[in-house]
Image (tube, rainbow, N blue to C red; front, side):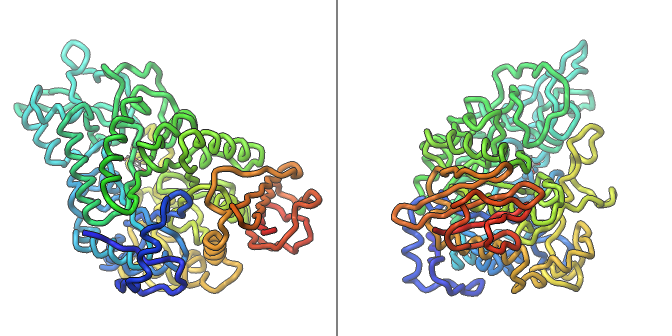
Length: 558
Ligand code: GLC
């Protein structure tokens, strides 16, 4: 099956389901390296739009709302998992990698969604979860039945326990969600049996990537989705598939952090790179530059760069940047070290501020008016690709007062689990000012939306030049028109007062672009010569006087 992409340089946006004219296709299809400066929008299917009114988002809902994404001006969409799953970890526990969970729709819905997106000039990246399956996956269920020593058990990490009667876990590894990373099985005759490894919830047993069957299965899953036209994969826990030989103790106690950067015997092992070299040959065998995006938490930017060698993956989320506070010196340091780390492998840096696992950046940065908008304009001015998490274009805050009884994040239910705040960034989007679930669907929403979100809805913000939605639309439009944004691999720092970040970027043969960010909570007079040229965009009111208001970013062209 071949899919064509509409040319996004054409201003007209065809309606969902309607393909762009044939002549428009070729330019986009031939765009080399489309991903290097791409802005990619993360859709969290449960919470984007609900077409069938069951309170849970679904694929037809996403399909109907694709024009919002085309109008926003993003280049691609990444969809969090929609596969068959018992939903022990919101779909990151997959029981069938080739099927759609009925709560999200059907395989035909998925194909129609991919086709519609392409018709609107949007590429589609799907989530791939290769570190673990669901405990309801047919392989794991069979492994339990077949017992110790079976071929099926060799596809997961089953081990006898320690202690006199195997009553202790095989090693000291902890689950990211809290508690031991091992669960003991019960043999068919009812006696306690072997233990199995799960770095996440007990319902998410880890595959053993030493198994040739596991490797072959994922090659086949990649091809299954590539054949359906997807433009790439976001690879879940991309640093986790290979474990240190012999599964040695980690040798210390203490809670692990999701998006942490600890050095551990089950993360960032060198053996994982062989898998990506293998996958790259599969991706490259398809036309149109299909990409791999690593969710890899590593101890350093240099370790992250290894995933992006020319024969491995294309992008890796920059979590070092996401974890940096609102501090000019710190931001400059992490921007420099990230760009420096990527240069030797020739990969773009991939900036990100929010996703479905972290507190939304508006709240993380302290709920200071305008600060999230200033942070967004900084991110969108940096060279490389950027990911936008659904709702950040509306300036949504984290919902911090969800009642316990509606929570679904598995880590919330563990005594010493991680912060348990992941539900607060997953609350369904508000599309309209009023109505049941604010236009999310016709039947409520699986997590309650704050009543105040009507004023943050797409409807309320559209056409209001001071809204965050219009800021993102303008920023992405400028990014499209201005070649110095997104492309390239470096920034030229300019002299600026304390607490202000200022840099210039110049595209080959193009005009210079200047970005200045005031991270101070007071206005600052910019250094002479800095605030010259035409203002392209500002994250808050700016009068052109050279005095940059608190928590504000301004873009100029010279
Ligand atoms: C990744 C996902 C997260 C999930 C975990 C286990 O970190 O982003 O949501 O819980 O992997 O699959």
